[in-house]
Length: 401
Figure 1 (cartoon, rainbow, N blue to C red):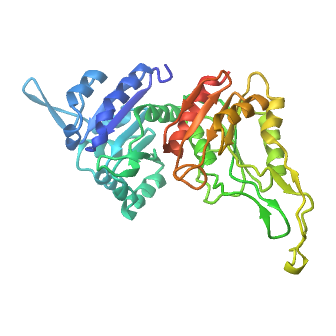
Figure 2 (figure 1 turned 120 degrees about the horizontal axis):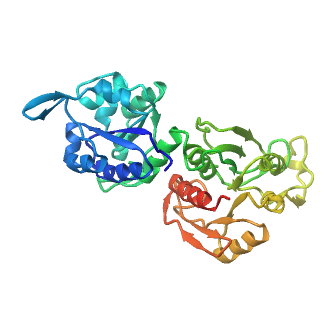
Figure 3 (figure 1 turned 135 degrees about the horizontal axis):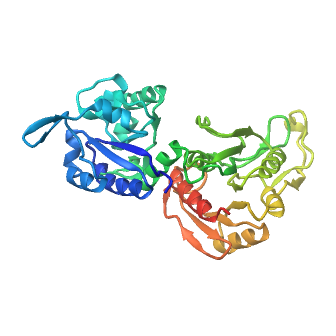
């Protein structure tokens, strides 16, 4: 019971995702938390106040006053704000987001937000075009500048029938975020090495051997691990995007496989586990040139040599109390080749990617097989890379010594 004795205040807005909140209430109570709910009047159209009251053991409040024995009773937003150890507003609609960003207080929920002295988290949920609108993004940035933690929406099918980024995270993911904010996440105290992105192996001063990896999968794993409380050491090759701000313990940018091997070898000794998702080049030019090779001086052939096998090296030195997860990208006989790689390199799990139109390098979605050394296999289904990151960390949580 990771939240024993903690007081969690849930703010519920009028979005379809509100129907999931009773499951979150149950999960919080199961973890030992005391839960109270405050709602906008519109939220009652999507989730029953009676259900929330029954599950939490407290009235679900939506107005400044309530009737008891024929008399009006004041529901103090100040007391609610001071009572909570953490305040999560989910789902957060565009309407309430605008009010929070600009200090507008016209209902009990927004007044409670302005009175809260505890950490505040918000989980926006709306249709993908609404989510992407510049005004919504500006309001989210405004909240972030106030120190509010924004729980990013997930990718998937939306109430409109469209598919994209806008879904409220599932209750178990919101629970993990609350636990982490309370310093009690499922990976709290776990030191985790993650590598991400490609490596570039120089041919000369301007040319290199590389691949199409953007680094997105590894960075999503690193961000989710931080959310779950892990102490993350991120080693990354050249990324095709700006690395998001996060509370990483260490970030080590590298370019070549040799540089990545040195950094991973150094940090692995200090960690409880590692997830190696980087697309490391398998070969490099044996004799890279310091200057640009002129076109009329091009060699007839470029002699290649193997790069360091980072995963095998860590597998050789892995301690019994460390967990090692690797990645494999296969186009043929995927499961067979992944199993051989897992056993040959002394891994606990291997994540098999098979590239396709919606999976692999440069896509927002992925599908993978998660294969354990016991022979257990899990199909992730076609999911966003952020969701796949969560599934990978789920198996790490269960496999960690």
